[in-house]
Picture 1: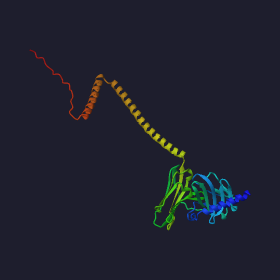
Picture 2: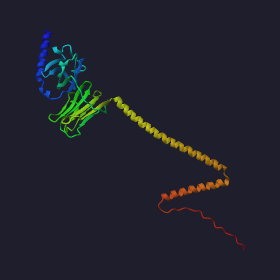
Picture 3: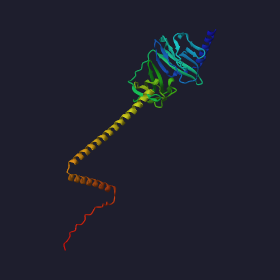
Picture 4: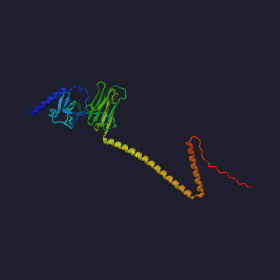
Amino acid sequence: MEATQKDLWYFMVLAILLGVIKDAFLEKPADSIKKLDPRGMTLECVCPWGGNLSMIAWVKMPDKKPVAVYHPNHGIAIHDEYAGRVEFLRSSLMDGSISISNATAGDVGLYQCSVQTFPKGSWTKNILVEESVDLNLSTPVPMVVGKGDTFALRCNYVDDGSVYQVTFVKVVGRSVDTVALCSRVEGGFLGADYRERATVNCSDLLGASVQLTNVTEEDGGIYHCHFSGQAFGQATTVSLTVAGEDSVMSRHTHDIYMYIYIGGGVSGLVLIVVVTTSICWHKRKKRRAKFRAKLHPMQRRLLNNYEQAALYDRMNKRAVHQEDGEVYANIPRQPRQTTNRKT
């Protein structure tokens, strides 16, 4: 009886779900492209916002074939075709990812994950499983962005030609995630995993750009953008590394130590100059003292008079430079010599 009620609930939920799924998503590109792997593959579906989880459902297009359903109260229901091969990972409350084991060519196709939440509503993601996923990536340009910062990728078209679409993707192992897309017909489009924190500028297809805010370490990887039009082959590939807080602190610490080393080197050089000058001055003073000691007293007196005269000249010149007017000095007058006349 309980099994019958569970099956009835399962088919009723699928009927309601399939009735509200729109066919419009078929006109948009897949949010992620996954390579078929017979050993097993994971189809990731993690809702980026919080709230109360109502249900998670997977269907396969184009005939909307049910794959699996998860309900917090009623449990899990797997379609017969996937029985024993599909498992919900449930690593977090809003994680609707599934793993498919023993995959065959029959598993190739487009899958849609729908996460029903309250109060924000439904969040969906489309994943295309293909037998091969090949990208001709150019040599990536390294780029380092700090954790929590903004990452911007710009794709410039340098030649003449008609461009009708620009695609930004992230390559992760055997899968390719659509970050953003600029189309001449449909405008801008953001992948499901980037709608909450990315913006795309499609005002000029020849210079389209995408910006990702508040990056995390999981955002690191290979990013690629390419043009679709009459002339192919133009693309840009970037290898993004997200530096964690420890790395950022290490860089700041390295800069601080660098400044300390530079300051210490300059201070040390100044100290060496001062010490060297002081030693030379003291040696010169000692040599002059020894030289004076060997002189005759009369020679020492003449030398002192010479040094005092030189000091007076320096002081006199300094006074002349400091005053703009006349310079006055008191010069002692020699006494007149008188001769005694005999009377």
